Amino acid sequence: MSIRFTAKARRGMVALTVAAGLALGVAGCGGGGDGDDKSNPSASASKDRGSKPSAQEGQAETPLAELKGTDGLLLRVTSAQRDAGGFVTVSGSLKNDGAESVAIPAQTSGDETEVIKHGQSLGGATLVDSKGKKRYYVLRDTDGRPLTTTGLTTLEAGQELPVFMQFPAPPTDTVDVALQLPTFSSGTIKISG
Image 1 (tube, rainbow, N blue to C red):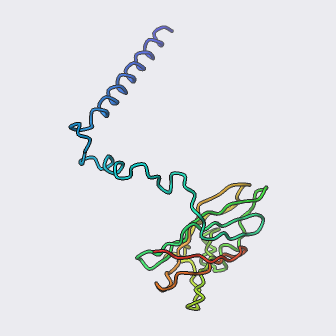
Image 2 (tube, rainbow, N blue to C red):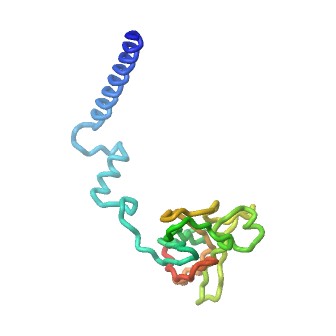
Image 3 (cartoon, one colour):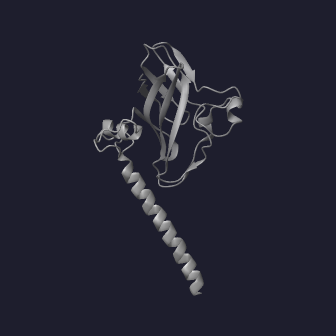
């Protein structure tokens, strides 16, 4: 039994020595000591950023719109970004604000057979441009899959999931559009970019 302990202790000492060597090696990689290491991109990036927090570091985004659904479901839209490729990506979260688990209504997938066959999604969402009198449907790939969050089933009480939907972009002078999703209230959102 003492042999097992000795072998185990020896492995532990080797691991500790390697870890200490790595720590010293990393600490010694700072360069010439002038504090301006231009060859290390991550060092430059952290200097440029300073102490400004990024959006991912806990600053809650003010939603563009909140669409209320059935049984306590809430779709919170946090961005609607126009991309150079000729589409708009709407992002946010789907939350169960209720006290019990809720199944995502099948209607959110829409009623197009090609979309439904790819499973539960937000494929039934549309953007309505009342100024241009046009309705934009969720984009699909060449196999008919909707370019939106898929695989939605049930949300437990308080559970929140990030979601997205991509649409063809309205004309650049159209900024305000209505987002509609079956079984949810409608909401006006502003497209940026």
